[in-house]
Length: 129
Image (cartoon, rainbow, N blue to C red; front, side, top):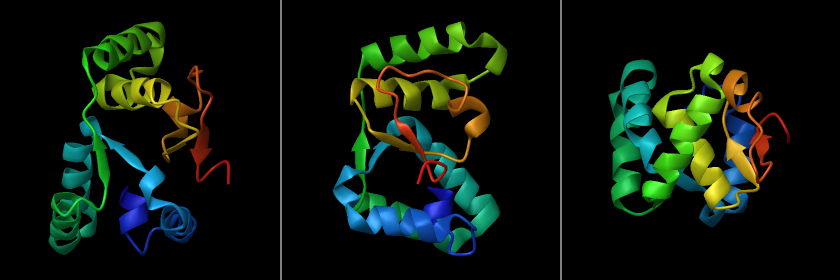
């Protein structure tokens, strides 16, 4: 999300093109929201942070709130890949990608997402463009 929002990010243009081609297909797992908020505030700026919150409130992004099965799967993935130290956010994103049978996950975190085999075998964007 940071690369999508930050026009100065080197991955901005390809992600922006993908988003604009089909914004309804982009689903934000609840777990990334505080992280995106924090990173925008500390790395991009308060205006970008406020714009993101405004876009969220206006419904520009679909947020997936998940259920307990997603947390159970996140816990299982974190245990299975203990050496990677995935953490809650990555575990939830991965679990929701499986649950929703997502065809792609937008992430620059190839260290974690590139090492984990998910049931739905989603592409990793922008790497797999």
